[in-house]
Length: 187
Image 1 (tube, one colour):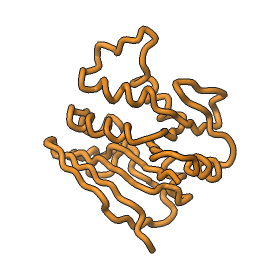
Image 2 (cartoon, helix red, strand yellow; image 1 turned 120 degrees about the vertical axis):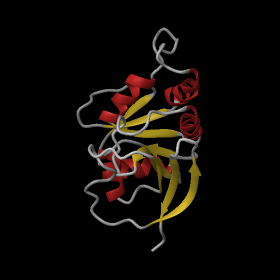
Image 3 (cartoon, rainbow, N blue to C red; image 1 turned 90 degrees about the horizontal axis):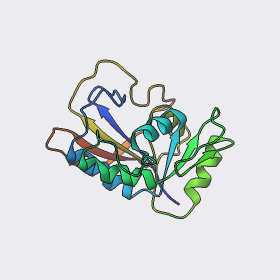
Image 4 (spheres, rainbow, N blue to C red; image 1 turned 180 degrees about the vertical axis):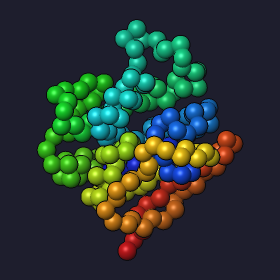
């Protein structure tokens, strides 16, 4: 069974809005590229899918945009080619190497996890909350940014039940950010 990993950048005060932290640098982008390469497929809600597509989809010209730094290209290439499963009740179709997830969320995600492969990842805010409430997340991976945002959506706000976690990996970055990976603790 493929594990489902929730991966996200977060500030010290728990804000997970993509503009609230520190802009990615070469070291953190390299880290996320490595993580993306360990992922068979991504599970995204509509908002995250559309945001990621607008930033990381290869343009029809084939050339990456001028705003993209050379060290961002490996991540862009990795996410562009990764299979995507989009959970949405409002979209009628998707592309960008994606398919819509239909039906009841729990069984649909369990079916994806049961397929052969190395790992699935999920990002965003709303969908991971629903998946955590269903007990479907096997790893929580946070790149904690050394900044206090003071506002914005916070990590897993509204979680129904407490989820005890155990630390399984830690990595410090020159910027002061820290990558932390946890698994639900055995009860």
